[in-house]
Figure: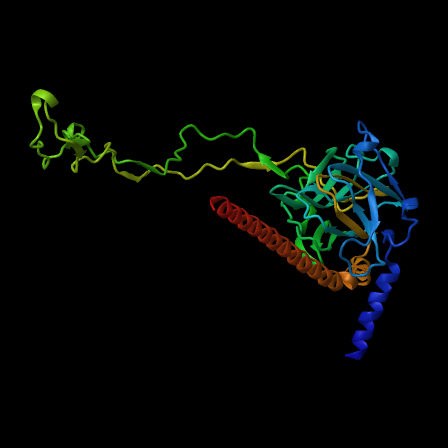
Length: 400
């Protein structure tokens, strides 16, 4: 057993040695701004753009471990960094970072983008990208975006199945794992939220089969499952039965005067013999053939993509391009690598090392906030009660 554990450990260490880290950022030094470039979106002025604050946040696991936080309400945010060198995905690709919404975000994005080299000073929503990943919230929409640019279609493709995002005020770890076998998995706090094949999760490829354009449903095809019973006939006099009749138990009031009140008419009631519009009984159609299915043929335009897994080609830049109504979102501990084990090891020494202490501090801050709000409410009530008491004493004095 000890020998087996040694082998497993050796394999894990070997995997770590082979892992490539394309980008890593922890924002723990005051020179972070020299690595990142703030942008102004085309058509916007500098006053439209918000600034990122370098901070550990209002609650944290380590006061010396900092990240960057949006700091101005109703602003656009543009920030990007270049990788040490560009890379083209050859095997797995993992994108991972942490997000914390200290402000109870109601509307705004917190996703990250990866793409080829571009003008960082004008990096914006118009800048082409290859992968967009991360949470986005506005109103009832609360999703984790996974969007891939697909050159063959020249489109940015959103995942067909929605992935919910976290909405509380604590830090959460978002991980996208694109595998060399053209499958994928999305984790939040290392808990799998969605997994599957790229081909099935996004509309990359045209369908393999299409309806045969030369075929159509035969004119004599019978797809009516039920028909009216041809032997059933509407009873004679059926349509002569009225829906309402005069109430047979009603009597003219004793004080009714026909000269003054006019001719008395009894009230109308529902006719118990009325059965509504006559409809024949429906029976099984003896000629029913079932639903017609359009024959399928191979799609002549279908083209397979053996490199569908390769979602990053000449990727060289990473960045945030956001709009937030209410600021206060923090970003930290970014890693782009070709190894999920490498990403997990990084998460263990960063996110998970701080998680419990941050959660405890948040709970304490919340408790203090609620206590302060309660004290404020009680103080306002006491002041109002005292004011009303003074007014009552003044009124009594005036009466004397």
